[in-house]
Image (tube, rainbow, N blue to C red; front, side):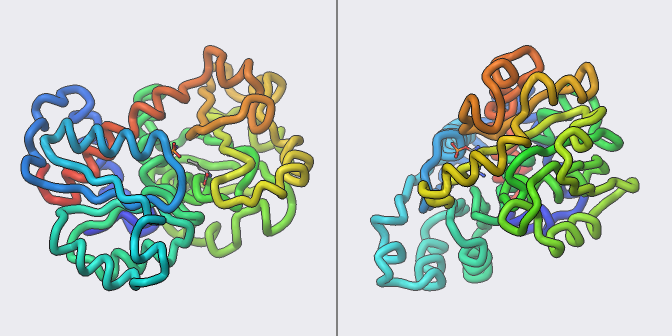
Length: 309
Ligand code: CP
Ligand code: NVA
């Protein structure tokens, strides 16, 4: 495990061991302070961010290293003057680890292929592995285990977070039930479903249904994500609100889940769209715990990719 481009490239053991390290990093951050002394993280952003940018930069500070924020629109790459390969071969001579938030997943793969240092995918249109590692850490904290639980995902399922959840659940033996509208624009592609199923341990199941209530029934975790991901054009709003509204997570849907179910959203969230305010601001919501865990798990990912812990 040299890079983190998609969880589908990692094994169940890789995920388990990073989650174990993340729990240790969270419990005793001082033990890891200074482990990145003299090291530099380059953070390339082609899209907006709050959590990813601030948690990676803070994590690097806490580990004794330095992080550079690099807005892709100010780069020769963003201006169409330089290739991904030349960019990455150059920065590999300066920095120790690269993270990138990009539109095209293929661009993240090309970065990894031409880099001599680890590359971390900080979200592409196709996947968001750092988020799902933080989510798994959160679920493990709340439920004491992962294997055998049921996670219900509602809403936009042709989506980076959904894809990574499918892989993360499969790799940890969790059952995932996806409730999403009919149509390729809103459902996971067959190839993604097959990839998730090929990763599954402990008979973990991957279900896609167009019935929101079926997906939510008896779930231990109810998860939703933005209907208007960063790469979705603003003029799609009206159509998407209409299509996704039957999949909104509200009190009625939460009532179908297990009584002790937790509610998750990777954030940013819009109250009244993918979930109602009473759900995200209610007692079952753990959205800020999952946001916090971005910090801890990403420190663990960097330490592990650099073979420092
Ligand atoms: N969840 C997440 O990745 O948030 P940001 O877009 O704010 O980084
Ligand atoms: N699916 C969302 C996740 C945001 C963290 C997006 O791509 O915008």
